[in-house]
Image 1 (cartoon, one colour):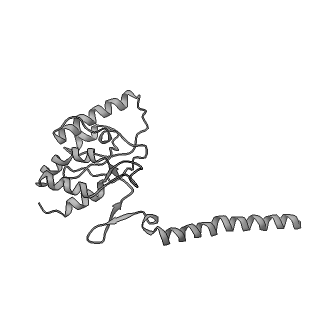
Image 2 (cartoon, rainbow, N blue to C red):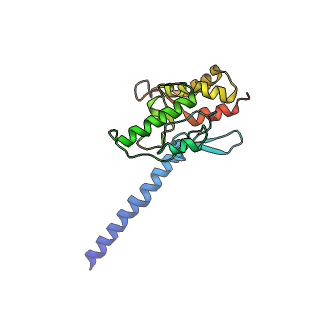
Image 3 (cartoon, rainbow, N blue to C red):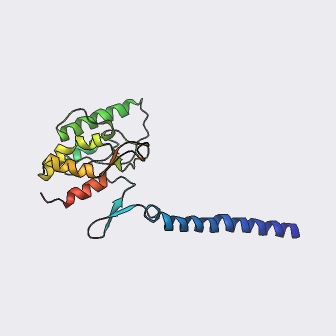
Length: 194
C-alpha cells in the first residue's frame, strides 16, 4: 500500500513538473524574449486594428492587391469572381495528378489574362504544403506590378518601390530565398493616395 502511494505521488509530481511548470516556464520565456512571435506576429493598421499576421497568408482577391501563393482548389471560382482570384484550402493532389495539371493550366490561363502576361510564376498557380505561406518570391510579386498599378492608377515604379520595401533577403545572407510579405505590401499600398 505504501509503495502504491509513493508511486502515485511520484507520478503526480512528474505531471505537475512536466505539464504545469514546464508550460509556465516556456510561456514566460516566450513572452519575455519573443513577445511578438509568441503572440502571433500580428500586424495592426494605423487605427490600431489587428489586420493579420506576418506568419499566415491572407486571401487577397481584388485586382488592386498583390496576390499570394495560390490556395485555389477549382477554377470554377475564377468565373464567379469576375476578375478576382478566389482562395480556398490546400490541395493534396500529387504532382503527377492529371487533375492537378488541368487545374494549374486553367489557373495559369486566368491569372495570365488578368495580368495581361504569359509565363505565370509557378507559385501563383500551385498550392503549398501548408496553404498558409505569407510570402511570395520577388519574381512573383514583380509579375503583378502592372495589374496593381493599373487598378490603383499608380505608376509601376511606385508599386515596385513598395514591394521592394517589404522584400526580405536570405536569412543571415545564407538561408532560404528572397521573399515578399504579401500582407505588408497590400497594407502599404492601401495607404497610398492615387
